[in-house]
Image 1 (cartoon, rainbow, N blue to C red):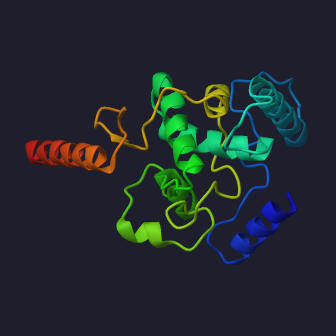
Image 2: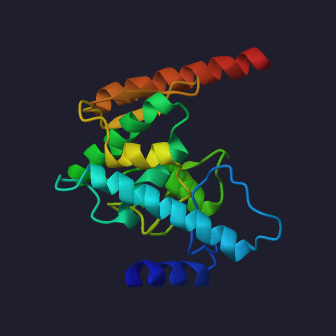
Length: 208
């Protein structure tokens, strides 16, 4: 964790954004705490819960080859899956795409990593945003970012641990309906991107 902490300190000092050391480690869920429970005690319970979930996920892949080498890396991958997925059925597919890219030493090119560093989650992204100089920018740097970009839920953690082994896709793009189109080749992906852009253009024209 020393390397991870130093990266967080450097990035915070540069003013890109302030980082929270517990990023990713607070298990998202609905909790009932007794009146008077302090923030530290509540956070401790959430962290304990998240660590238990990570341990369970890691136990499923014990002895298998994975694209992550630690609980921290699993959590980081899961946080990206969580940020991308809208449907439960797609989590393992999205995890598979990123696993496939990591196995081939490709850049992840995950928009949520850039949105995280620029605080633009849910906002429109521009090509200039992809140039931000940060180890969290998966368009510029290979491998997983230094740490999680959010707090992934249990489903995302298990999807990251056990991605769809039958999925050979290397790309995906929005289908404009909340889901995604998955492609094996760049040509297929480019065609899917064009279809998405045409549908968005037609939608905008219809709103005028």
